[in-house]
Length: 285
Ligand SMILES: [Zn+2]
Image (cartoon, rainbow, N blue to C red; front, side, top):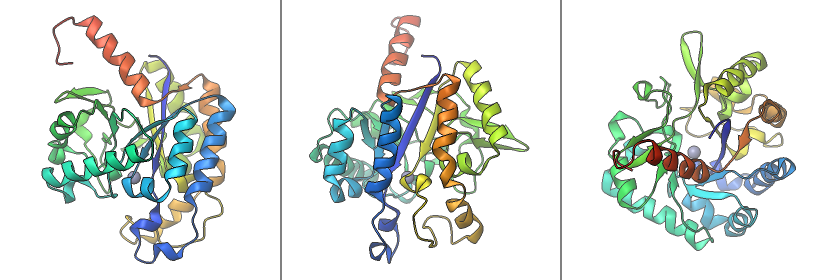
């Protein structure tokens, strides 16, 4: 499928990752509604990768997302990176994640995204577990060097691994770095000309544009505090708040370019059909 923009929301509540988090104002429903409104204004459906504890805290919000036709996929029961879990723990927590989403009304859950893109060469055992539990795809790899996680050798294209289609984040060269074009903080911080140029190149490349956003990425009203999972870095925390007000404007520019947002599961289904046609009986699908 050409010109697919795999826009997705990693639906997590950062308050659940902080010791004093529940004393902070609730922001997730308002931000999810912001995304839903924007998607509706363009007539697009997308994928929400949902953490299990968020589904338990906001079941009616999950139902609303489903009713609007969006896909629900897994993002861990709690937001724990894979290298902090054993394969058995991963399996149990993933089942708990899926059960929580199913209780909230999700059906036929097929996809997974590792918290903080923590699926790397070291944690590639996760694919076997995903396959075993009946998942069909993952979008958990950042194919670049990164201060937190990254798998630079993975390469830019979607790939079958142990029966799971891995769709890596789209990255572009920026000086000596490769960075996600349409991913949360990068999307806000990168200069507009870089985003425009990258999008143009990806549009011509016949690859999907895979990107991720969080509830806080569009939140212009959130109070200031040190975000979790950034090693208490004041610089990263500054970036966590940077340019949130322009996210929808930048997203509009991608859509204007001709990209079509579609849920991952639909993209995966079409890709699998294409692969099966190309190599009848000759692949591991
Ligand atoms: Zn996440």
